[in-house]
Amino acid sequence: MVFGAVMTKRQAIGHGSLGNRLGAFGPEIVAPLLRAIGDAPAENTFMKELDRALAPAVFAAVKEGLGKAVETPEQELRRLAASVPGPKVRIYRLRRGEDEPAADSVARIGGTPRGVVTAPVDRKEPMTHILTLDLAQLPELAASHPGARSLSLYLPDPDTAERHRHGTLVWTTEAELGRAPGSIEDAVTLLVEAFDVPEQIFGGRDLEGAAKRVRRIVYGSAGFVGGGPLWLQDGDPGVDPSFLFQFDESLAYINLGDSGVMYVFDGDIDWQCH
Image (cartoon, rainbow, N blue to C red):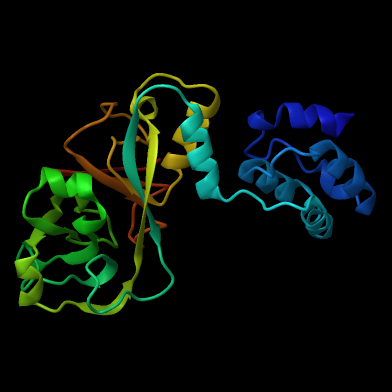
């Protein structure tokens, strides 16, 4: 009966709300859990909360007994975003890969970007390349910057965070990519995936239900391109054509303070932390 009631409210479950008391149970809890889940889909967030709440062996038994695939985080985001009425906006989530990029690839985290002969300088010292976006993967951004093929972010001293706002952007054309080969030494792949999300998640008002969860998922991404900034603290809300992308330390290993986020605009770089 308890688990049946939980299933009717599973959209409200998250952030450890199942507590830790279920971890005291052994295999006897598996059958009633499976009966309560029944034909309901194995939704990503709910399954993550079960994994957090149950003993490892018990969760493994529940997962095996489901007889259905567990929803991926990407599938969850698409499902929730599609369920929210109103206009949508295309964004591109950014993730850090595990392998080094191909030598002829454009996008990368770290390393040296193709097409940049000389790194920009700050106080007579060369800045550090943080990441490069391939605009061929980002058609909306490419359309707003005709002729550009890549966008590289450079920062003066990424380890101290003292001069992040003095960083700069380098736009490179297709023809310029061949003027310098770049380097994949100390670089990793930058993964890009498109999503259509509710425009309202970028507004400043409080949200409920699926829209609130979509905003939380997008904000929790390692980074994303397009839409508008999701501020850690204060900032102007809404979809912003000058907004390029934002990211946290899980994407690029730089100093952003306590749970910090970097916000990159066309002509401005900002960052916030707790």
